[in-house]
Amino acid sequence: MQRPADAASRLLMATGLGLILAAAFGMQQQMLDFDTVGVGWIIGIAGLLLIGLSILVARGEGPLAKAYPLEDDLEMANRVKGDVEETEKDSSVGNAWAKLEATVLEQDISEQE
Image 1 (cartoon, one colour):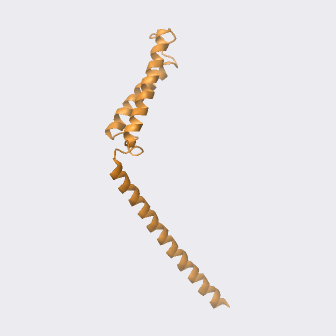
Image 2 (tube, one colour):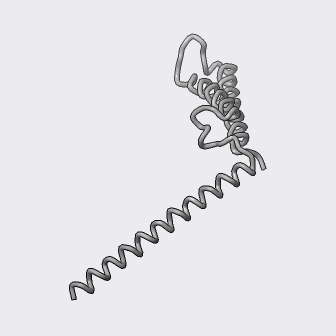
Image 3 (cartoon, one colour):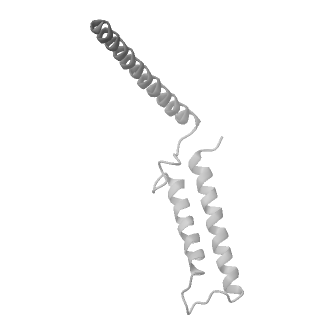
């Protein structure tokens, strides 16, 4: 199985190259002009930004590094196992508080009667 960072990097790179290709076709068809800066240039600039972001994700850096970690299957399994254990621990603590609260309420009701 591939790492999340590799998959995201490939997707961002392909999208960026596609946007640059679209901008190049626009220049070839004379829809984009070097003399005037218009809305069409956003496509080429977005392509360059996506390629740069792809390189950062592949290195495990940048703003998407947390969303797409650079970890293999074993590291991912250990991380998920730790998350599950933490969730179970939080659940058991919550259940203990609920039981304590129920016991206190039962005592209050019995004292009022």
